Image (cartoon, rainbow, N blue to C red; front, side, top):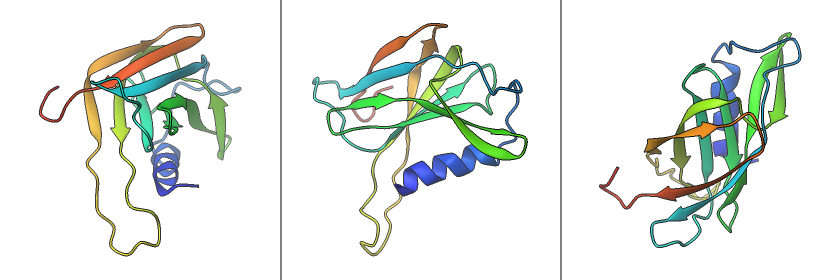
Length: 139
C-alpha cells in the first residue's frame, strides 16, 4: 500500500465524517482518466474528491499507468473504518497528489498537491470523467 493511500486514509479516519447513514454514505460509481493538456495519460499518484456539501467526505483513487482511476469513499461506522466504491453526489474539489520517490529511497521530497480550479459534479448515476491537468502556472 502506497504512503499516499495511507495518508488519504488517515485524513479521512480522523476527520470526524458526517452525513453517513447506518449503512454508510450513499455513493455512485466514479471512474475516469487523468491526462496532461497534451493528451498524455497522467501516470501515478492519487486523485482526491472532496465534497463541497460535506467537506469531511473524501473519495480517493490511485492513478494507474494509463491515467485511469476508480474512486472509493472511506468512512467510519460504529467506530470502524469502512470503504464503499464511488463518491457521494454533488460538487467536489479535486486534488491530484503526484507520486513521490519510492519508499526506502532515502530522503523524502515533499510534493505539493495540485488543486484544480474547476469543480467536478458527481451525478446520482454511473459517472465517467476525463480530468485534464493544466500546465504549471495555469489554473
